[in-house]
View (cartoon, rainbow, N blue to C red):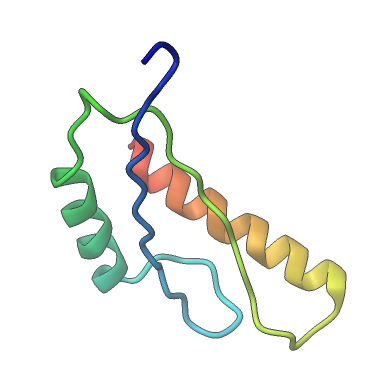
Length: 78
């Protein structure tokens, strides 16, 4: 069937300490395990999404979410 493809998705959660974006050793170990289990021959993309709780201002939470995504991205590409 032309144009047909299979999509395989997997979701992993990275937890942060309250109000922080630094990766813990436990989180680094989980990311290391994730990377070891990725088959690069079939990987086409990774989507990183940051979330926070509802505490704090909107701008604070947006910045915290962004910094969390940057921390994970930086670690993955290192």
